[in-house]
Amino acid sequence: MKRLAVLISGTGTNLQAIIDATENGRLPGVCVAVVVSNRKAAYGLERAAAHGIPTIYHPLLPYRRPGRSRAEYDADLVDLLAPYRPDLIVQAGWMHILGEPFLRHYRGKVLNIHPALPGTFPGMHAIERAYEAYQRGKITETGVMVHWVPDERVDEGPPILVERVPILPEDSLEDLEARVHALEHDLYVRAIARALGA
Image 1: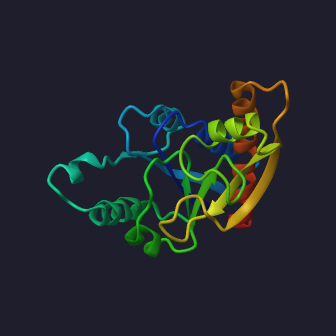
Image 2: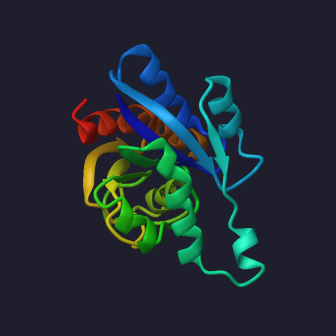
Image 3: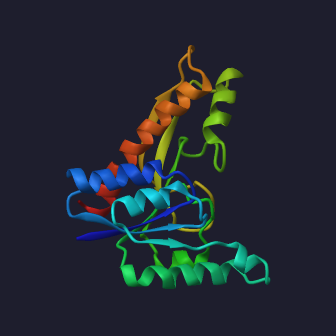
C-alpha cells in the first residue's frame, strides 16, 4: 500500500477528491495515511476525520512568536510525518512554502498543484489574475499543472501533468473558477497515480 501525506490549509476539496479516489478504485493500492493542516479551523481536517484518517495540526505562529526559524518548523514537520512513512507528500492548498530541511528529507517525493499553466501566474490568486489578463486581451486560456517541488521556488515545477482551460467570452470569474477547480480534482488524482506508478 502506497501512503500519502496530504498538507492542507483550507476547505480540502482537492483532499476530498484524493480520498474519494482511494476509496472508489481510481487510486488502487493507495491510502491517505495522514492529513496535516497549519490552520486549526481548516474544514479539510473534518473531511479527513469523517474517513478515519489521522490528522495533525501544525501551526507556524508558535514558532514565529518566540523567534524560532522556519527551518525548525519544517524539521519538526519531518518528525511529525515520520511515523506515517509517506511515499508521497501532496500539497493540496497548503499555504506555506516548504523549506529546504523538509524538501531535502523528501527529495523527489513532494507534489503541488497550481491553477495556471507553467510559467504563468505563480503564487496567490492565479485564476483571478488569469481572468483579468483575459479581459485585457493578453491571453485566451489558462490551465492547471501538477508539479514536483524540488526547491523553495514557487509554482515552478517541473510539471508532471498539465492541462489547458479555455477562457470563454461568456465566462464570469466564478464560471472560470468552477471549471478550473473541477479539472484540479481530476488532474491531481491522475498525477498522483503517475507519480506512484499506481
